[in-house]
Image 1: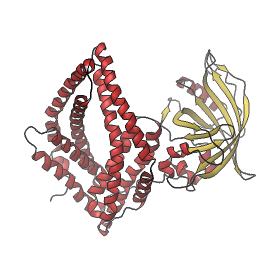
Image 2: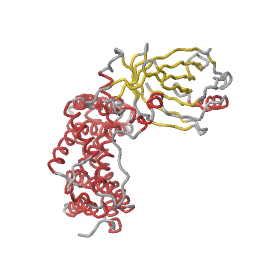
Image 3: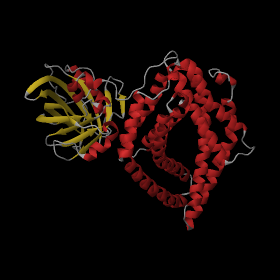
Image 4: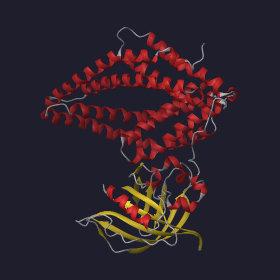
Length: 500
């Protein structure tokens, strides 16, 4: 379920105002009061809270897991509408359900989930209904007591406006009415964060450092590793729950960047430490990639099929159903890999790497002196590979150029904080080369899949139509990529790279 709400502060003197007339045609229900007893679970170091996640048990309701906010949108009148996924589970009150724990496995790993906050809440609630009696929103006034055994350790109050469906237009007038009655400014801080205090507001377990040219190279290495590890940890629960291809994509990018960084900065790393880590990252990247590649292919062919005549479109959807079945199987394998002890062990090692990578003494030198030299190696490999291409390169050779361009881009992005704008411009142009060659590779992959699919009759004819479209796209990319390469192969883009 998608939770969409605005939170407001409120003092002891606040009284929930009459909401009749706040929006034309909306009925306001009579206020009702309930008492809620809630226990929040987390690790001892509050990993979930620091990542913006909550796991609670509420008497009479069961378990609720809330993931980090998906987005925050403003209505232009100071009301911030937060959206986040909310999942519910059944189970006893003393131990979190295994299904809920599995979703946050990347954060918890081998740690124990324990009760960290107990809240008693007196909730006064009114609902706003449309002409058909459907709920548009509800406004709740919560008086919260934070309990320490039988003692009340703290008290606070908050107002929530929770919106159903697409009733966003109701938010601004509701917030205006509430603030006019004395409610405070919008405050997105969840109840359990307020109850837990400053420790719960610390940065997540893994976070990048602020670095500059004078920083030791090891700090830059640590920072770029932490950035990608944090991205992997953040997207892991979304891979498990959302079915959104973007979640798999971002998790895969994180693993690829990590492997690239371990390779680029290899001369400054303990090889006995970094090589096994790269191997394990390759394993999970392969599992993520199997799903991602097929999802890209499916999305691509769906778009191609839209240009077909209606009769052919129906046959095309039959062909694409085979791809959907394939993706479903690959996703099951991916989830099995993510639930394995091997993956949990990898995450533990990655978190440790984000805190203290095994660097060599040379990494204590200033980053501005050491790292630009290492950053030139991926570029030289890319340039050499392009120079050695045949006049009409094979598809596999163009794919290799794309991979090398991506590594050069990742490296430039990694050293940009200590090198400056030159590396940023270089990375931007490398991304353009990566994109055009990615279009070529996607076309080649689509053609190969269509040719290899066992179909007959009308579906085979439609597959041929799609192959023809993909062939045109591949040829177009072949014509365009040399110009993009020339744009990247400009001396001015490499001023930040030291000479041999």
